[in-house]
Length: 178
Image (cartoon, rainbow, N blue to C red; front, side, top):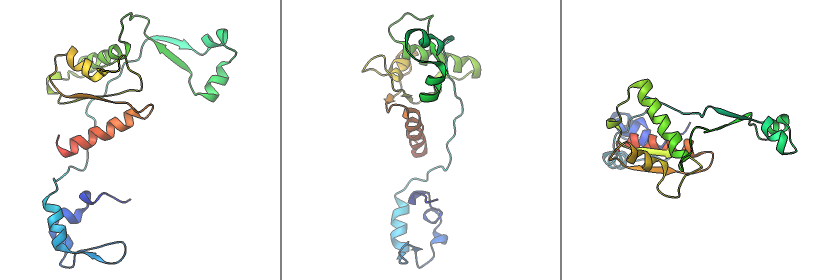
């Protein structure tokens, strides 16, 4: 596994570099003097970042594939085989204009109830979704306002992979100490 140069042990340990430097792939060596200049400008990044608390909210009302059999020319087996969806969830108890925000709000409320998490310790709100209530502001900004948090908030929107990208951005920000 190839690691980025800033995670290499030889940058943080001058004794590991030796007098001749570090070997390159092509057989030549990176001079130790150059490595010293590289290492001096880099922050020492932590190697691991982990999730401390995770919360979610799933609406209670289930909309099974059988519902679509009555209105479309399809079957439960066809939907499962082609799309992989067994059921959908709807928020039948909510009649407002911002359902994505409401799902996020309920997830935050659940987090606070189950873990006793203190929202005053939040430094950043990063939301990840492929659907929005509004073009702007995003759900993260609305959560920030709802709970009176005066922290930066932004949204990553990249279809189905939004959560993966958001985790990578959050990891990078935490490693840099932001």
